[in-house]
Image (cartoon, rainbow, N blue to C red; front, side):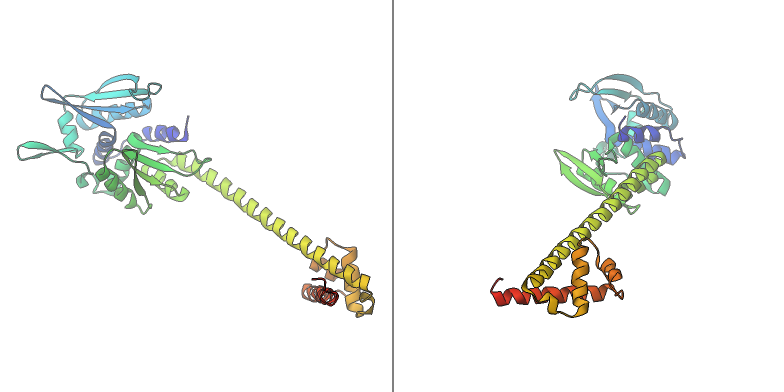
Length: 316
């Protein structure tokens, strides 16, 4: 089972809240997963879902809010026949449900179809949470955390996408939207924001699973950064040591090394005998021991003299 499916299963097991929240959750499901049909002047509403748990929750929501038992059928989706789907159809009471969901309203003796979110449904904080939960159950998906952080809602209208984005961002989550292949997508791409949204809609087990992955990823990243830094330092040290040894060898070959001061001769001898030692380790080997700065100064002086020697020979 995918992480998205596990999250949906968890949400479907949540107990129902207050009546206003139950109505808001069902309204969102109707808006994102519902289809309106007219036959012989009679209006019908059908909700489709690939999740058996979600189908059961929709059934219970209709019973709780309207005292209606939707007709339930199952079959293959028309576009993707390999996907099994559940269809819940409401005929009697469909118009009331659609009006409550803010999808239709009376105007001038007729009906007007509304594409956005009815603000009356989401006035309270608890109702906003329930509405987003319903939208996720009907149109949400979540990438497996091991593969990346991405949560999205695929919606049919720009107005609804814009309103849902604003609703999510009322919790300061930084959701964004875009148009994609004839649909409108509201999405989150930051692990922390996704985790916060899951808290908002009540998917606490999914939050724990996501945070575990985030912690492991951060630990791996820290280890990788540490290893890369150490590798870079080792490479830098090795390159510097090779350059210093080359300079000392050049001075020795020219006979100039023997004419240098005792501290410089000792420094050169210690470096030649310990090509892999760090500056601190080299300083501890000298008699008397000196600090890193003094070692660096002496080695740099040897390199400068070797460079001067090459210039005198015309070997640049």
